[in-house]
Image (tube, rainbow, N blue to C red; front, side, top):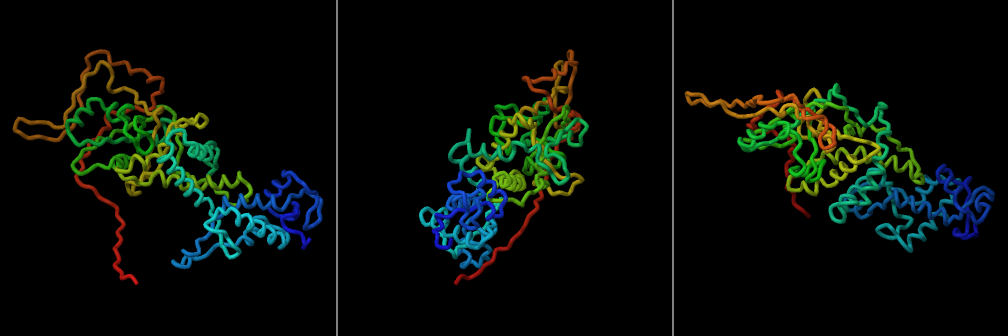
Length: 452
C-alpha cells in the first residue's frame, strides 16, 4: 500500500467519517471494488475523484489568508493548513489518507490555482463561512445589477429564489412565521403617511383631495424609492406619526402633512424585523449543498435587513436603491407567497417610543385607497390661514366640503381590478411646521500623528 502512487489509490466509505461524503461516494460510479487503505470491498471511489469532490467544496467554503497583511499589520493568523482541514471535514480514519489527499490536491493547484498564488504546505486557509459568502454575493449582485443587466438578471433571480421561495416555512425561535397577516383589528392596521411641502399653495391644493394627494402617488408621478422603481407607486407608511415625519427628512421651514390610514382588508406582510430570530443551523457539512444553503440563507436574512435600512444619500439613491428595488419586485410578484408588502425597521428616529419604530410598505397591488371622503357630490375648499378684520392672521388649516348632489356612492370596492386596501381617516390629518431638526451623532476626533 505504501508504494502505490496516490493517484492510483481507492478509498471506501468506511475510511471516512463525514456522513454526506459517504452518500456521495456511494452514488459515485466505481471502477475498482476494493479499498487501498483497509482492503474492504464496500463502496469505493478513486482517490483522485475524491480529491476533485473535496477541492470543489473546499474552494466554495475556504479562502487563503493573506500572509503579507498578517505580517505587515499584525493581523492574527487563525487559519489552518490543508492537511488539518482534510482531517476536520473528511474525517479520515488514517493519517496516510489525509497525506495522500493533500499531495493530490496540491498537484491540482500547481496546474490551475483558484487562489492568489500556488498554495504550499505552509499556506493557511480560513473558512469563509456564510457571512463572507453573503458579502461576496451581495457585492457581486449589486455590481451585476448596476453595470451589466438590470432586467432579467439571472444572478439576482437565482439568489432571490434560494432565499425567499419558501420563506413562509422558515422557522423562528418562537415558532412564529415571518409572514404577518394584518387584519383590520390588528395593531398594525393603522398606518401613518407623511408628505413634504415647501410651498403653501401646494399644500392647500393637496388638502382639496387628501385621499389622492396624501396617499400613494399615481404611477406616472411615482419617484424611485427604497422599495419601488420610478413609475411604480407603492404606499410608504409607518406605525407612528413621528416615524412617518422623520422618514421624509423635512428641512427647516417646510411643512409636512401627516394622515392616518386604516387597513380595511387582510394583507400579508413579510416582517423583515424578525429575520434575526430565524433558527440557525450552523452544524453542516461542506459536502451537503442543502444544509450549506440553509446556513447561507440564515446569514443572508440576518444581514439583509441591515442592508435594506442602510441610509442612502439622495445623490446616490438611483444606484443605492437598485438592489432593494429588485428584492421588492421579486416579492411583490411571487405567486406562491402572495405578499402585499413588507415591514422593516426605521433608523431615522431613536427607539424611544412605546413601540419600535417601523416602516410598512404596501406593494402597488395593495396600495389602493378607497374614496370615502372625496366622494362624488361633494365640493371642497381648503385654506391654511384665517384672516380677521383687525388684520390678524392665524395659522389654522381647514378643509371645507359642501354637499351638492348624491354623495352616498363610495366609488365601489374595486379600482382597476384591484381591491381597495386603505381608507383615509379624514379627521386625522395634521400639518407640522418644521422649526428645527435634532441629530443623533457619533463624534470622532481626528488624530494627528507623524509618520516614520
